[in-house]
Length: 346
Image 1 (cartoon, rainbow, N blue to C red):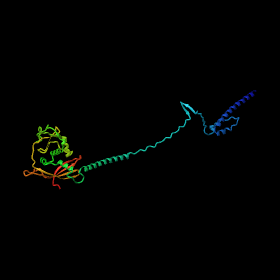
Image 2: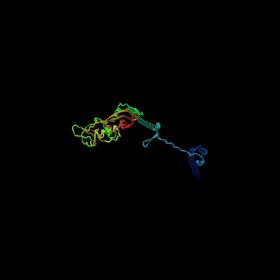
Image 3: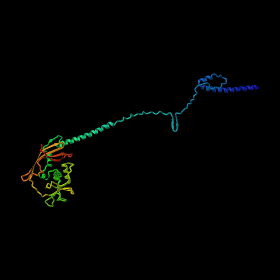
Image 4: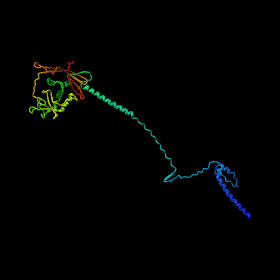
């Protein structure tokens, strides 16, 4: 009985063992099946009903470790932080147009051309202005750039210049030199009657310009003209640079001229002269030639002083040939330069 009991127990034990062993084998087989082919070949030699030995796959076989990958199902649309996560639609790429870099313009040549053009324009205008002045000088007067040009004695220009400077016998007797007194007198002769007006004898000095006086009588009305009028006449006849100071207009102590300069009034005032002297000499004057060269005009005058049996011609009055010289100034006035006695004109 006891033996039977023991046998039964033994059998049960073995059965449990076998079950466990079978389970172990199955587990082992599962692992082997998951292993590479080389490992599965080893496992096929195990006979059923035998206990498998513990098998160290890593020790007995060499090969890459199994890689277990696990697939995860990701939902198509999943909202995380209020934003959908899933299939991100591919954005359409816009074609980017790359602009070609603009070509820089070199302005230096243009600037150089402009500067040269301006310089050329200035030079042209200067030369043109110079040519215009030369043309005007040549066309508006008989003065050219020839060495010498003979002028018509009856021309307006020649007669006008000669009338400005020629003198009569009385004027020659009073003064024959072209000093400041003569210049003032000749300038006074250029003043028109429209510039002379009636005035008075206020501040007139009786001793400053003898024999002239300024009597307060009904029959006499002193005439006058402005200081500025005299200065303008001086500049027109003798040039802008003429240095002729204001003074009394009188030739010597004669009754020729007779305008006293009164600085306080800024006027020239005419005085009264009672002296009358007889002229016993005479002068024959004749304009014989007129020439131009460059900007100059010369007038040649033949002069002959004549006395009488009772009186000889004063030594200061010398007959002969005299040349008056004029020059064209920047204001297109022919200014009086000089009067010279020369040898007989050839």
